[in-house]
Amino acid sequence: MKRIVLLFLFSILFFLTGNYGQIQASQVNFTVQPITSDYQLNKKKTYFDLKADPGTDTQLKIKVINLINRPIKVAFIVRNATTNYNGVVEYAESQSQVVAQQPFSIIDTVKLNQDKMTIPANGEKIITMDVELPKKSFNGIVAGGISVIEDSELQTQGKTRQAVIDNRYLYTTAVVFHGQKNVDSAQLNLKKVEPIQINARNVIAAKFENQSAMFLNNVHVDARVRQLGNSKIIYQSDNKDMQIAPSSEFVYPIPLIAGKSLKSGTYEFMADVTSKNQIWHFKQKFTIDGLKARELNKKDVTIDHTNYLFYWTVFILLIVAINALIIFWINRKLKKKYQEINEHKQFK
Image (tube, rainbow, N blue to C red; front, top):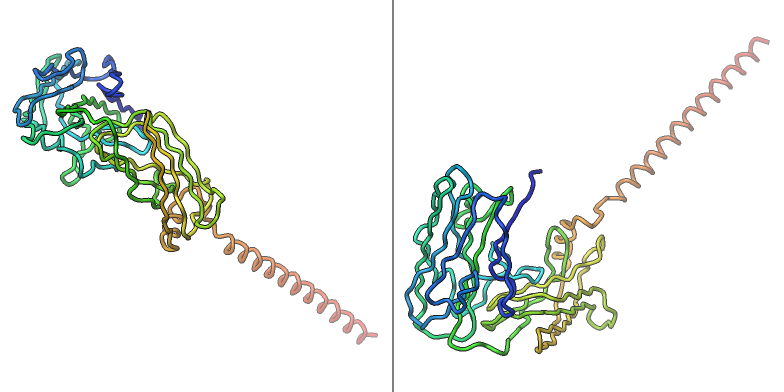
């Protein structure tokens, strides 16, 4: 298996705390450098931290620097910020989505003038993106990212371009638009609880929605599951120091005990979620039907699917066959012996 290398340029780690990290590019073919915008709030930050009036038309620019002595082709992708299963904000292809309450989509607002570019050997070029902010004002934050990846590392599936995890180098520069006012209080809702699979393992998934245009930082989730009408907790998960992107889904998985099958029935999900000085308490009933449980159990790699009944049946039939052969052999020996005795008596 080839060495898997996935390098993200996270220009921003925790937006509201002002922390950010950058990956050095000494071992990659290229690096990127965002060019400061006129609408940059803090010009010392290395990501696009922008505030402009509604309806503003402007441009964003990123310099791509080729570090090797041959031309390279790079591709550009614009994505909304989403939240993965681990409670980490990301800008790659994701199972999670943004919610309807998002003031606007980064994908619709930041338009690439070209989605591919060839960078000459040891040279550099600038990619330009047109930005047209909606005319309607908004409060809070809208976040996304601009990713740069070598074009040879891309696959196209239908209309979706996604990166191949195979010796690839991906840089993502965050883009944050600030509205007229900050949102100080978040609205977090629990939309659905259901069994799903992650990495071929059964989990109970709670789908939360951050319906506010603000990051939820220092998120702590304490989740429990019990059978309805029974006080005994059968599944539990407790995780801290997570982050939820603005206006995004957060699917929180509760793992099952490895090797244990999912059972049909009616259950109750309970969770306490905190983010800084806010706390939410959730409780929701959900049902797992027998068909769904069987389908998921069949695909769970931790469950032993060995058909022991088959092996026991074969074993018993084998024992019966061996015994039958032994009895047949003994009968044959005895019959031959009796025959010899009778023949001997006849000669006397």
